[in-house]
Amino acid sequence: MATIRARPAPSGGDADLSDAMPAEATEDRRVNDTMLLDAALEAFVEKGFHGTSMRDIARRAGTSVSHSYYYFPSKHHILWLIVSRICQVLLDELAVVEAEAGPAPDARLAALVRAHVLLHARAQSESFVGNSELRSLHPQDRPRVIEMRDRISRYFRTAIEDGLREGRFRSTEPAAELTLAVVTMCTAVAGWYRPGGGTTPEDLADHYAGMVLRMVGATS
Image (spheres, rainbow, N blue to C red):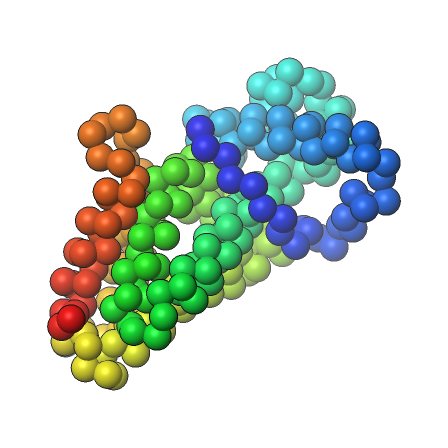
């Protein structure tokens, strides 16, 4: 299980106290956070959010329920952290690869597709939970995650719109539908890709980039 780490905005206005903690306490908290988040991720993949209890998470992490609540106020908070982190990691990666790709829409779109596929092939559990448990997020957290997902889609839509406007893409389909198709097919990788099956994440990412360029009718 490839666990992705990032620092999201806190849920429900919780303050980040790590800067005020002694170094040893900060490291202890980080270790316990990681153990519990990994245990929760494993449980959510296996049993789903609603089929998982804080007792399940604590047992998998080898600790007590009260200890779990000391680090995380609720199961919903844990879900928010898992989902928001994978979204933020993807947003950060898309920003980097888009900047590195340069202004050409085809190069940008190919780079975005590669990054999207690579993340979903390497962090399948986080990606699976992020997509399957969106409905289970606390009502105050769901709009924030949807906004992050909209920002992810916007990278792809902007590249596609630019390509269509500049005549580099010759698809007759609307940019909105092309964007939905591209993001959906990239996201789906997390559900079926199996490491060790003969195709590396890098090979898969390159293959998908080529498929997407053909789908939008790239001319270069």
